[in-house]
Amino acid sequence: MSGNGTCAVRFGLAGLGGYAAYMCDRLLAEQAAPWARLVAVCEPELHRFPERAEQLRHRGVVLLRSFEQLLSENIEAVCLPVPIDLHCPFTQAALSAGKAVLCEKPAAGCVDDVDLMIAARDRAALPVGIGFQDVYQPAVHEIKRRLAAGEFGAIRSVAVAGCWPRGDRYYRRNTWAGRLQRNGRWILDSPAQNALAHYLHLALFLMGHGVDESARPVRVEAELYRANPIENYDTCSLRLTMPDAAILLAGFTHACGVNTDASLVVHAEKARIVYKPARQIEIHHEAVVERLPLLRAIHPRMFQTFHAWLRGTDPQAPGGTLEMARAHVLATNVASQASPVVDIPQQYITLLREEIVATPLRAVQGIEQAIQSSVRAGQMLHESGLLPWTVPPGVMDVPADYAHFAGPARRPEPQPAAQPSPIATPSSLPASVTT
Image (cartoon, rainbow, N blue to C red; front, top):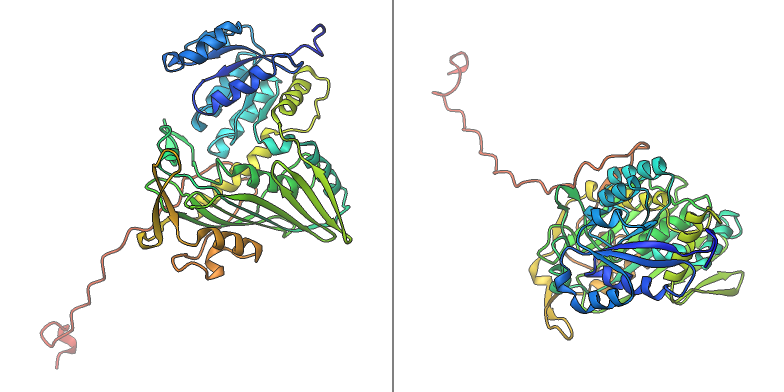
């Protein structure tokens, strides 16, 4: 293809394991399309992927051992499906080398790192896209434009829920799953920060007033729990209050035995909008139901948007920006800063076996029904009364200039019982009051 505006973006890919393998397939599938071309891959442990390496060599893809080598190749952009703690340093390095960035979600583990990424992007004057797939959906942006225009009135509340079973296989698949930090950088891996983060991010985006803005909470209430032997939480109930008093209520868990589709419902003054992932958006408005289909394969659209940003053919093409992603990271940071993680008592946890691999899966009794019912009722888990082990939330008002994650809240150490004061006897009383 000829012409800078139409030729495919020359991508380098970081990694071949885990989600990087999936992104490798997506990039290879684009080879015949005008949006993206996979040129080079870096993988420090190439010996682990002999079949994939041979496939890539056959396709003319350059194989390298380090990210530094990748940045020296004749590429225009890097795709970063890498561990969360690497998002910020790899993005900074790529931008300094003159490469645009398509980074996996979340943007980073803390707002401090997101702000560093924003500053690096602005210095390089190159695009950075974040892989929150839902915000590349054309139907999502149609809904957002109509919400921003006031067609459905003000948003009163948004309810988000998701129960996705994740057991030992998930938490042992790498060195950072379920952890707070790695290599000195915040990760805060959790359902709200990783697997189910798409829906928290989407809710914040839909609640933002501008067509390309996400809402920023001014108050966060958080109940954080864990059933698995991990550092961070695997179950949460969140209530986020926005500047206009709209409420976002979210309930997520990995400590469950049954997979339930993630749900997102927007309650506006004049409509109820239901987002059904990978299927459609339903608008219940004036006794009429309007249905907008969602794309099943979203990565071609993501690459198309990124192409438009980099080529300058449509710099405002709708997609996942660092500013949108920052609102999500801010919400998860404040939740962790506000509330300690509470261990769910063992008597309420059932040990199951995952299908096929038969690894342990910890399921909290009644958690699926409790999360779905409480979110539908506009309640946090502790308010629902459906589970006997819940506790009141941690609460934090978000400063307008919040730009530093101060670390997760810690459960107070149990204090030794106060010793009773000795009873005064005539011999221990001051001389002035003896009888």
